[in-house]
Length: 80
Image (cartoon, rainbow, N blue to C red; front, side, top):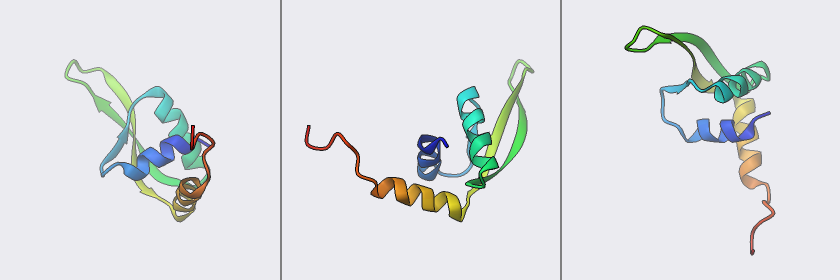
């Protein structure tokens, strides 16, 4: 699971649109695990080229729990 993307989505204000390849792949994983609800879109640039995007509609309750767990998890570099 890409917890970094889930944490970033939690901080984003709607509309949450993802277009980079890495984000699309990670969002697919989050979608398949039921951590987000999203829809696929095709967006067109000014030059007319098609670009794939994912519109994240909602972080599910399961996703919110994962975010909360990550926020309370101790991180190893404190005090260095």
